View 1: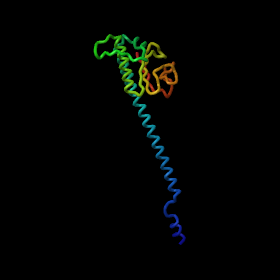
View 2: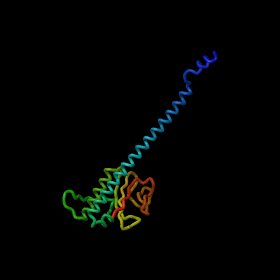
View 3: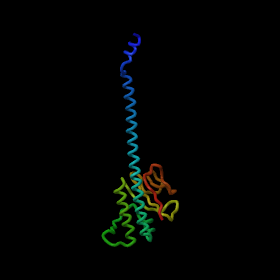
View 4: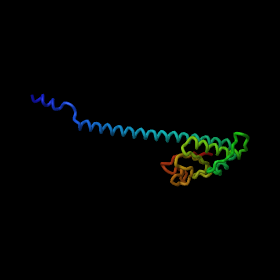
Length: 169
């Protein structure tokens, strides 16, 4: 008789057990959702970085093809978008520098959010040219400022810098 009443009392689950299990399930679902958001953010960053490396490599090859004008690439005003268009006709090597700047800046703007590109003398070795490709809030500056891509020492300005620096020639 004693065993029957004990079995009868423990039949089913209580409301507290159901609430605790629902709370654990909710915490697990929220954790999984946060993990998915982080994975998407990391994937986007990797895609942007790969596109930036491609843009930098393309500009490096253009500079290599027009090597006699390397000083012009280094000293050019990368803040302005040149109007030079060499697709319609033949350009001199000096005009090709302006065209390469224009096409690289347009490619960076199309492929990256708020994308930009610049080539400047490298801080560590002034004889080299560094290509800076940046996106989002990061600029192509190498001043070490808050949103700058590069520091005055030639390294990345910070861990949050969304840019690529490539040393060439």
